[in-house]
Amino acid sequence: MDHFNYKNAELFTENVAVAKIATEVGTPCYVYSSATLTHHFNVLNSAFEGLNPLICFALKSNSNFAVIKTLTNLGAGVDVVSEGEIRRALACDVSPSKMIFSGVGKTAAEMRFALEIDIFQFNVESAPELELLNKVAGEIGKKARIAIRVNPDVDAATHGKITTGLKTSKFGIDVNVAPAIFAQAAAMANIDLQGVSVHIGSQITDLQPFESAFARLKDFVTDLEKAGHIIRTIDLGGGLGIPYELGKNPPTPEAYAQIVKNIFGDYSGKLIFEPGRVITGNAGILISEVIYVKATTARNFLIVDAAMNDLIRPSYYDAHHDIVPVVQPQHAKPNQELPQTQYDIVGPVCETGDTFATLRSLPELKAGDLIAFRSAGAYGAVMASTYNSRLMVAEVMVNGDEYAVTSRRQTYDEMFEREQIPAWLK
Image (cartoon, rainbow, N blue to C red; front, side, top):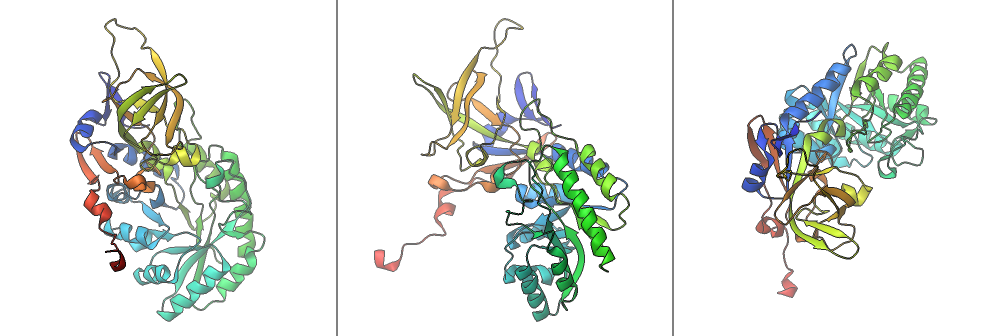
């Protein structure tokens, strides 16, 4: 469910016309729905009723301040993967007691910062990381609360670039050798070993990989407890997929939660979840304006002002986004079906890879028309860049019948302010 709907043939975000935002803010522009974010979080929260959950929103999916604040006001914690994300969360008044620090490459400086603010948990992913964290914690007189991320060698059956639970992945510690790392951690003076974590990938649309990974984790936890470890937290990660195409519906949060309850329903400690895309993905769209319609003997190209630097998912992951006109064309005769044209929808960046869709059927469009890329709230603006010296995209949050620019469009002066010409070239 989302709050992007047509009213009298015009696309609205909640009660605000998308065309109004495009006119006043410009394009390309991301638009987020507060009501959709709220609904998605509440559905997840309700699904875990009866457990002892801590839902930590994965900032990597969308780190816009307004998105973070909306979710943490509802009670969410955060899953962070860098000092920058920790600082973003702090700027949005997130308590460190609700922060999980994940990632395979935490530096000593990042560890020190996280220890000084006393985050709830580090998810440790290797023996060298464990040793460094113990050293850094000792240097500043702190004790690091940790979970050790194990790799269950389960294929998430998703895109190769977002599969994280195979033994060939860079993430986590092989579940077969992890007991020795747990014993090592338990003996360290500056480590508080409180839990275990797992995360097998993203955009998972089949519950079987979750069930396999969780069952293996449950057996592993049982073995740890038999060995004398007290496991106070189990972090089950995230990864539940969303519908990117109309009519293709992945499993529901309720079905996912039932698997968790079947396997961990008797667990008395805290269960941690790290949802990202499932909350933010369908809570955002990208608005773009058609610059040209270019007809060739082979294709009709819809050249738009958004590009791969604004939304890289189609180029990087071969990802599908439904694309719709912001204003649906009308015919004089009622109930007449609109003729469709097949377009390759492309951006202005000088790469063939700057292609959003090929042979996509849409009503006939012309220069100046607006289109919307649906399901763009996750891994959209957060992965944007200034490639081709294009300005960073603007972001907007809608709340009912009002909206606010939550990240303004970059200016050229801002783009260039970090750079300088060496003295010998002047």
